[in-house]
Length: 483
Image (cartoon, rainbow, N blue to C red):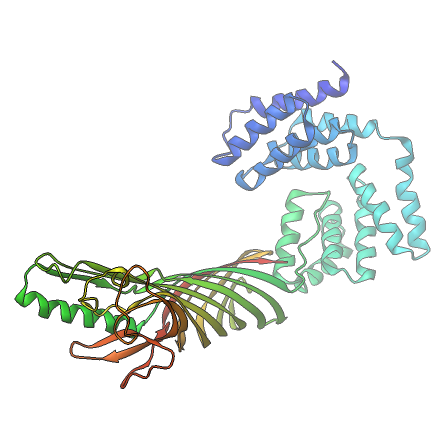
């Protein structure tokens, strides 16, 4: 076995040998999978599996150790040192430190001139050229603290205050240089909360440092909600059927009616947005509402001319619009924000009706007040939602929110076509009922308000357009990724 492979396997044995159980859940599966790939010498897959364990392991030195071993065996020595050093920073191990020194010793001598080249660049004020040279020195000579000071100065001149503050702070922590202490304190106070948290995390982990997250101002929200809906006309229709069923049951105990409209449904929205200012966000909304369906059945066991029947109306709701969110109150270093939001939207809706009676050849084809049509109808209109809630930003590139709100939306004028019979079409039911165009309307009668199908060209006295009333309270959450 080659010396290179021997040292890598020695590090893998470290992963297996420890007795402290620091991983749980999927981390255990990722480690087992990674070790399996490693023993098969499939180092790219092993690297990915070790990396996948990091979010699930609160003390992921094993993951960094495995990643370093993989990089070393893929002849990526600089990256190997980076990950092995992170592992050693989390869990000091003489074997890992020895391994790191052996890798550094194998680096070609040409690398040793990086600091000299960087100093020359600084003298000539070529700060951009000096930065990669100094980062290379930091990686291979982490005790050369002057390189951290120089790198901090390069970033400072270029206006990158977070990176400058980090390198100055690390230099000061190692050298205790009092001339830099006040500068570091002043620079840290000028950083954002996110950058301060990043700086503290990087100082704890040690070099090589990872760059801070920089939001472009764009974000994407995924928003599941539960929405209560009025559905006034449909609830009135349900009440009308129940009233009629109760009257029929007084003279015929075998007469039974079951009817109901959904109280609400699950909404799913996608909201890409732009942070216009510190307190204002403007975006677009795309969503749908799953309402289920209105359903009704009746039966009369004692009547041959009034057979069993059923009817249903399914809802399809799609909305698109804009969103405007303001965040007037901020707490806990801006990690918690109270917001108000308005979402004016355009709703595209559809209704699908189904009625078993239109295929019934009984002469008593209008035995119940179901809409005598099976078909598809659509309409559209404007509405809006209003929300108040709280944003919580646990890490720089994501947010979680909870909110309460209210939706105002009433869609009228459902037109379409379907197989129609009975009532206002003047056509008896049967297997060959014709396709007809028309609209769904509401009509008040003896037992209440019913929903009817009115063919084009027919006027029904007292009828009014059917309204799909989506108004109601909303409770929901946002899961946001910042880009």
